[in-house]
Image 1 (tube, rainbow over the protein chains, first blue to last red):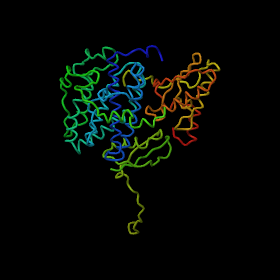
Image 2 (cartoon, rainbow over the protein chains, first blue to last red):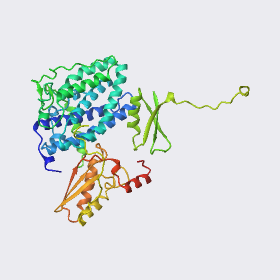
Image 3 (cartoon, each protein chain N blue to C red):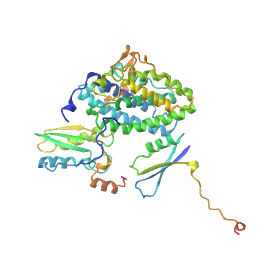
Image 4 (tube, each protein chain N blue to C red):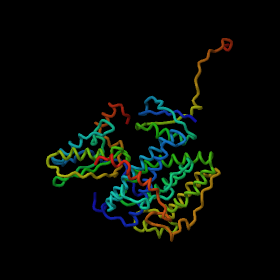
Length: 259
Length: 67
Length: 124
């Protein structure tokens, strides 16, 4: 590996990759929880594959974070729930199938858009490889949301309203336009947050065109730029349950680990 | 809806009936087929709605129908 | 795709030791070639998962990739590579670097791997 590839990323880039990695970690968890609860076996099989893909991607993102000086034990097994920087919608386990589909669809797509914006050489090939996985995740979500928008439009719209603010906070504040996005300024990404927000919403407007589902509007004060936590890419101090953190860290299975 | 999944390993090979998937749309059927049956690097994979699969019957032709 | 797309195609991609590799490097490649892919009956070298092996005074660095990022045998494969190389006389340490550049593709498989996979009834 070249010396350049070993160079330090700016702190904002480390936080950005940490938030993507933790979002994928929680996606893996939520796909796992729903693995046997989908409406049919085919959804369960797809969901199980999605979960495995996410965990594989997390492993690579953690590897890069470790090279950037982030402690491996902290990443994997030694964290408080409030130290996870996952997209806020993934804090909770969705109680119904349409809610779950909206939750993972928005989170997985947003995480992909943030990843795909990275232009740093440490990600060469890796993001392309992740894209091979993500095609099937996003296609599954969109195909499912198309049918749900016809069968259960109210449930889909309610879930969109519930999760949109948290997802916009994960993508970032509207004030991060072309000249103001610190990651673009640092040459770490090549697509400003404000542009990603627009593209993200536009995707769902197109997907739900002709259905009874309305996609929430983009408002510049969601998230409130003054309240926004750059490290955890959200507003407020919500977090996953301790029980979920224990599962992510393998607390109850630790006695079976072969060192 | 029930879909039948057909695959082949190489161009020119016979098509194999790999199995079936239940799906609410063609788009979902494609994804489910891939996720369920992608254990090989198929040259081709396709899905057919069961309702579009027409049975070919062998029925005796009435002798009076033959001029 | 954006700037993080690796070079397209595998032109110039070669598996195994460079032509000017010394005997020790050749031995290291031959040793790693004994490690089977846990899923199918070909070696990691024939699967084109080993991109490079470098030696610096007994310290070996293996640069490798995976056909699947979510490989369940990810750690097991690395443990196998480390274990087999540590038995080679002259090796003091083994480091494994994972890379995705270039992204693995089936076009990289060696002819031997293609033949063995076909014999095992696995389609390409």
